[in-house]
Length: 297
Image 1 (tube, rainbow, N blue to C red):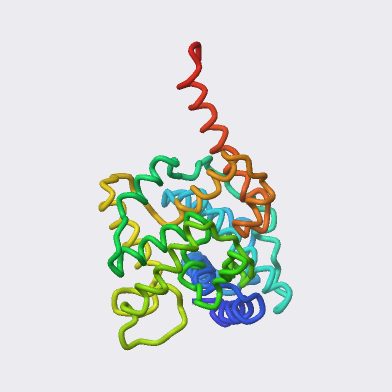
Image 2 (cartoon, rainbow, N blue to C red; image 1 turned 90 degrees about the vertical axis):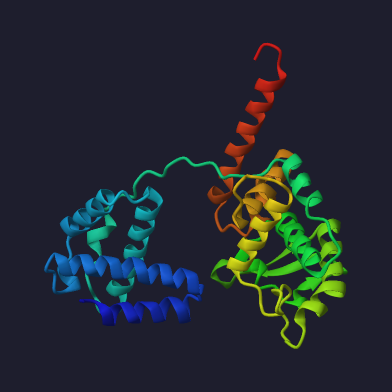
């Protein structure tokens, strides 16, 4: 396959100089390798030979595979970044993808829970055994802070500041931020740390806040499993994934009067456009409320 040397150089660059997360690096590698395999099929033997026609053929092939527009857009962005790097480091032409338009994004509103649903989820999972206390702390913290699951599992004991009521979070691109924790979440975390975590730790020793039932560092897959079990325990049949609690956090803040800039900072979004999707959710919420409540709606 052509371009492997250049690909490895690019991976080193985004890992060592850009400090991208392992997940982001894997996505870049997968996207670029897919493109390089396509070039092999087109009998392209040199990255400098790639022209606009190859870029168009590649995107057409992606559409024929019925990939989502968001996936196609991500692949285009990955390859553009790769070619910018090639142009700077190896003097390879980058114009093939420069004039290629991203596909128009599908309008998808984020899924979230209503306040009544969250209350049912909390009430259905009360308990004083070690796993129930841990699970409640996870649920409370995700809902109270809107952090990503990758940020949640990276929290260490020292990252919780009880005196100021904040948690230190390492976000995308290794950007650090402090997020406030509400009283409910802080109490749940404190109770878990005092009564549950020591029992779950057993003979293991590490500083990560959340652990599994063997005392090992909790994984993202583990969090997903825990949340699904909590849904079953609360007799709720809606599908749940950790990001829904992030969506719920943002939506409830905006519904209750928070300004968009504050929500952007709390979520750790680099651009306001990433946060603005939640304004569509709140508008839809208002529309449904009006339709249900107004006598002549």
